[in-house]
Length: 121
Image (cartoon, rainbow, N blue to C red; front, side):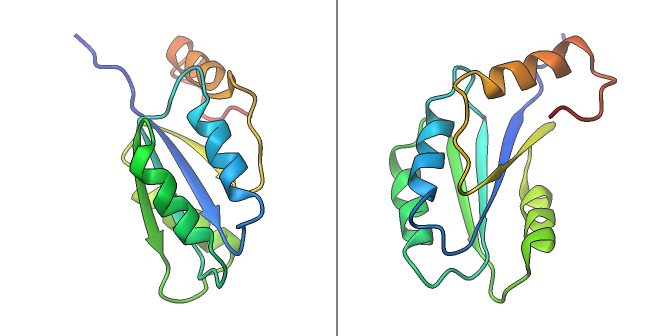
């Protein structure tokens, strides 16, 4: 019996305290929850990392926060977040997104029906 693919969300943050709570809430409201959320913070000087930490305490899925010891920039920070994901499928999230409640469900369904697909957006 084949196990279901694990779904990860890789999120990058940097000084996003104004928006990040809304994005975290939209991920937690998904009709198909992720199996994990990996957040890589790129040296925020505001409360972004604290907001993620507080969210992680009651999140309905595993949340792992990594704070980079030095600034990496957007591309390298996303590469870092992707490397830290344990899922078979990875969905990228910006800190200031708001997701439609069925985004992950639809993403997951496409890959479940057509495993040869390499990218969905």
